[in-house]
Image (cartoon, rainbow, N blue to C red):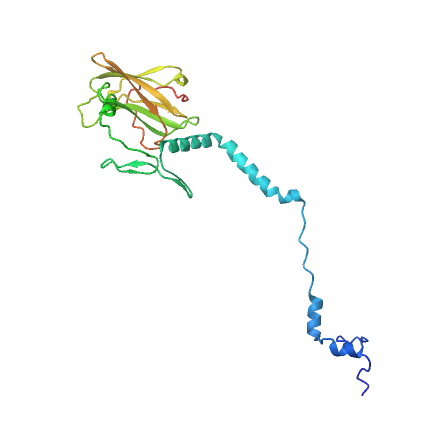
Length: 261
């Protein structure tokens, strides 16, 4: 045994002598210097920074505040939107919001085929009672019908601008020639005023603005002295369908912009 060998002790892997027994020398695993250096170079994982529980809930508070702000700022628009959605559901119209879809009821005008779940039963008007009732909406007013159009309002406090006028029922001999003038009444929000229109060229049209649906009644004064009252529920279901025609040269039917009832 030479002087460089170690008797009763072994040389440390990094040159530092360590005292071990003979049995420990036989069973101890042998590691290379590079392996031991790798172990010494490994660092424990850095601990995640800890914050106060209130900071962790800050994002939730921000989203809640944002939602409340949107509801407060757009409360009028949201109210009108929910009213229209509620009305469409009650009327059986189709609605689709993302993955939510409510199918509408549809009746084929040709063969009477019905689709959709809103129509539960179909029967025939065998005694003609319903037909007679329907004719009463045509004959008393000499087949002149009160209709309306709506477009988004140009007034900041109103939702739609509305045009009401008379149209003769098509495929008949109905005419506006026998009409002298038409008197419109919209309700107390218009000051309980009665507005008269003599503009026969534009169907005795009259324009106003409103932020909600309302009922309009119109008295049709015929040249022979007869007076017939018709009515129209001015709804907003049509949205922006239709456009307002050009106003007449004279404006006998111009009225004040008022709120709806």
